[in-house]
Image (cartoon, rainbow, N blue to C red; front, side):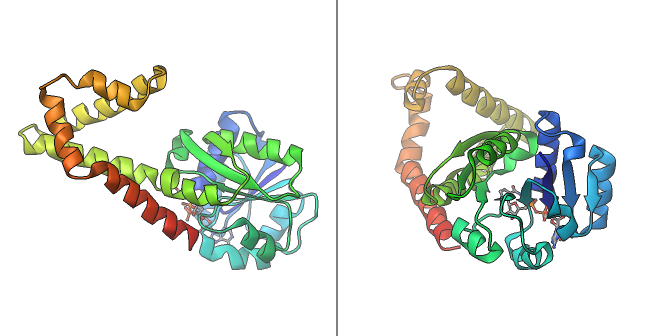
Length: 263
Ligand SMILES: NC(=O)c1ccc[n+]([C@@H]2O[C@H](COP(=O)([O-])OP(=O)(O)OC[C@H]3O[C@@H](n4cnc5c(N)ncnc54)[C@H](OP(=O)(O)O)[C@@H]3O)[C@@H](O)[C@H]2O)c1
């Protein structure tokens, strides 16, 4: 399998690292085409992959062409890559660029649109993806392996789920970081040093997620286990419910979804 990356910034590099680390592709199976010479030099010296400046030659012989550039660069890329062969498949990770738009603008029918998220940079991401009807079973398997090297992956059959995933898992790391930041501030507010507060919050968040993952319980069941009648936790939870935390999350994710639909 020959894979070409058009653009290899933060996400492209994460994918290259994941592919090599998980033995999904050998170094000689990866070609990187990036406009930026410093990026090309870095990727070549760090991973040993072949790098090129010309998007057309880079994609000519590949089975899978991964578009990992910013959406605003798509027009230029299409001009530079030119016409693709019908047996080639394009995998786009560009946020907000719909499958039908990709098919129309690239004038190609074998296209996969994926929405990874930021923890993909350490192989702990989750990607939601959809394939156009012309993508073969073998190409879907290939996409599954590529996206699995970034963490978990879920294939969907309707594009609306990609917009929903954009709002939930795509933007999700920002919600989690804000939540962690706010808890650290709360610790400082009641008198802990910032360093201790950070350590307490980080390990609490990590430990809680691992506990949830390892138990077969619903989050509400585990929350109840921490909430003694008349105790301290219930005082805090009451404040969070009074402040509308749950409905605020629903409103926030709905706002992100509405934005994703109209990008
Ligand atoms: N970062 C995330 O967490 C994340 C999550 C989900 C989806 N995405 C999507 O992934 C895509 C890539 O994001 P990123 O954060 O990896 O962006 P990035 O770091 O800016 O990487 C894009 C790379 O493409 C290069 N490039 C620009 N025009 C090019 C051209 N015509 N031919 C070849 N290379 C070109 C850029 O070079 P210059 O820097 O010199 O322009 C840069 O090295 C975006 O569409 C984004 O929506 C990102």
